[in-house]
Image (cartoon, rainbow, N blue to C red):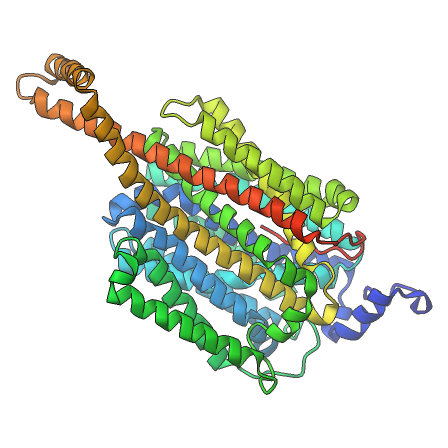
Length: 552
């Protein structure tokens, strides 16, 4: 029995009438049980993609040592994945229309698995690793946005709250287990073996998708199968060139480098060309449907908030494991435990916000609450971070950080997309995730650039202070020398060893101060979100029936 068929057609609400006109025949004929099975099947591969994307941050310090790369080089492991993710997201709707829902999902799983195999085969090759991450991101970019649209189409109205809660539960289980499991594999074997953890679940997900997802079009009705190759090409060229310029700009002194200037010009020209091409009325099926998106006032008004939320999510998860591994001395398994605390807080926050907070406050107020909570969480880290902060305090603070980001994610998605009609669902949802993931990429890039700049500054200041405190410095070096003489044996060099210990302390302290600076920036961004909400006075208080709920 279909969803509409089970209702009295004479008493349909406006949204139900639109639902009946827009859904495809293959979707309308699905029973409630089939819809739940499809949701959990697609949710399984989505959970694997999200959990891996979270957990890769745990492996970055180990990965950096094995491929002989700098922190800037290793950040590309995340950045290039995000670029592939963005490109896949932009064309995912066209692929689902041309290939059908099942073929599209199976192809995406195949690409994701191919990228994971490439990551496993690149324990010492940075180039192969980065290429594999692009392929992996291109496969993984389809899962999240398709899952969100499936929820709205298969469980409209009040049923969406139950469906989202069930999916959050499925995602949370993997998000809590995965970081610890990948960290343990990295400590026990090697970091690249952690990518093999995906394959048993990918095999199960592939079987379930093949068995239960219909072959045909499962999403909205559409007669067009036009391939916007020019739009996709211009967008990919703009994103790639811009990312290269932003990531290398600090190192190559920005406009003093012809290399950076060239890529910035290419990025600007390609992006302007994309805007013109995508906006043309003659373009029957553009990549992002900017004309449609521009008509969505809530999405247009909240685009800055969505981008900032994405940047905070990316930068926060990038910095936290770096602090735990490089300033503290936690192993990959222990760091995974902290990330699991983060995802536990995130899962609890998402469920509580969806079921209780959002229906009572509405999107704008939820964003404001989330901004205040996130600001408090960042300030808390600023004051508690030291090289010897107790484990229990770090775990609690990490849980609270995950709890704080949840209202921001739910509130921002509700403000941006809750008023979209079914006919615009794909365009609005894709644009929302595109902007948020683009913000995520910029957040990681900004954190890397800021870290390099601030570490240089703090190192110079620490050495300068040490030089001005020469008696104290000499006394400290003397104590180090005595310790080395006592424990190092006759073959040791106490003077050189003392200097090396001092240099190590300077590096550790400069890293700590740099991470604190980044979290200070995240606190400022939280205040910016709050100011934007107050200044624009976004009025978006939809009923629970009309609310959209987007995922991590």
